[in-house]
Length: 141
Image (cartoon, rainbow, N blue to C red):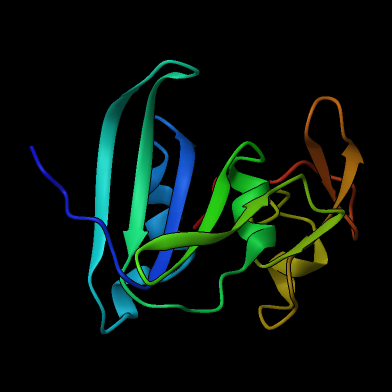
């Protein structure tokens, strides 16, 4: 299988195998007018298998979303067919509307327009807690 290189755009690399669709949805990549290629289960010496997303245009990416989903991701900025910048991610201190509180008594369950805000409680284990009720986040909706 051959996937052409891109002249200008973004390559999201080192995605844990199977996580590319979650990233695609979280970043709303389906709303873009440019080409987006998702390459799943690519052999990797470092990771065993990984996913890659190629976007054929430069866009503003929410690096906090990417860092929350998988802090080992790298983001490569491509111009003239060459990488001009490589960004390494880390767990963000706070994420807003990336995950949802699963506590039915949390104020975010009652006040629908209230943002779902989580703070990083334990960096080593990657644990986030709701700022309103201290609950761990539920599955993304």
